[in-house]
Amino acid sequence: MKIICVHQSADMYGSDRSFLQVVIYLSQSGDYDKITIVLPRTGPLVSELEKLNVDIVYLDLSLLSKTYLTKLQWGKILFPLMKCRSKLKLFNAYDVVYANTSVILDFYVLAPFLKQTKIIHIREIPNKLMSNLLSVLLKRAKTKIIFNSYSTLKSFKALDNSVVIHNAFEGFGSGIAREVKSVEDRVLHVLLIGRINGWKGQDFAIESLVKMKSDSVLLRIVGSTSAGNERLVLDLKKKVEHLGLTKQVEFFDFVSDTAGIYAWSDVVIVPSTKPEPFGRIAIEAMSLHKPVIAANHGGLPEIIEHDVSGFLFEPNNTASFVNALTKYADDRELLALHGANAKNAYDEKFSLKGFYAKLDSVFKDKAIGKN
Image (cartoon, rainbow, N blue to C red; front, side):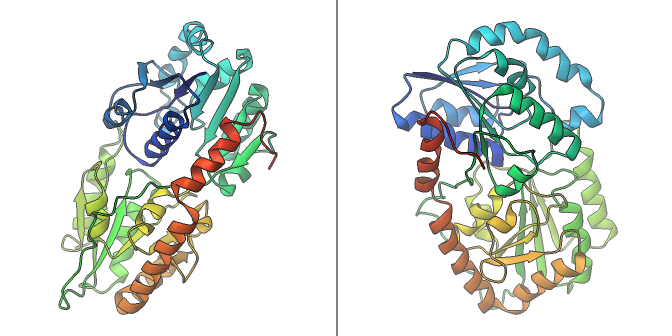
């Protein structure tokens, strides 16, 4: 059999890494004589895909990008649809068509004309208007649907032939050392890693530090922003200076090798102001014995057990967030206990073995159950 997989990016953020996991699964399954990957551009993801002996095709894709929509850049969405006929011819040469994420408009347009197996992996929680629109398109597409969390599933209307498969993490390998701090180092190392945008909570975390003791926390923000939004990073740095937090907040650009970044941290925070569809950052941190403080919405409550493997705080509530952070700053034994619990939860629930077994139910069965 032959399969073609369409992805909207070529970076190495959460959805890109999750897509890579699916491609690795497909390459190891032995079910496909040919695997072709469709990307809109080149990037760090490409070098990882090239290791898997897959074909890579670059196409101008129609993406429901928040940047395009908010800046009314309709041409970037509509013009790629003019090439749908050639894309349809390409897709029809394969037995299975797999679309990763819900933002690839080409898939919705072409799916009703594709008679082979179609699979879409939903990794986003859209607003209500977009959710209603995509739900209609998904019904019309008659495709198998994978949701990455129950929270993601609930944001859409009821859809047949759908299943929830939580994301997994392959681990950093046994050679990653956990950083051991001296007794004198009482500063709590807090990590916020991921793409910088208007809802990931970088702004919220910086403002919350004003409520902490001046010398108790060092926040490291790691990540870059999408093209056209560079101003966001500059604004965050100005806010740090304005609030007098230059000794408490560090900025680092995105790096593909994040193991050392996680090892540096004591605790990882996911303070997203809007619901996270899943929260891959959380399971990456947990794999290295790091407890997680996360906003209590979206898919994060499906990952973190409150006061066991971390803390869940009221979204957008500074007092609730600072209370959780202070507990770890004041009690390092609790920090260590929650870190150990986090590692156990990762091992039990978010391993690749279980993830691949669940993917079998979609890629190898003729139909999947209704959620």
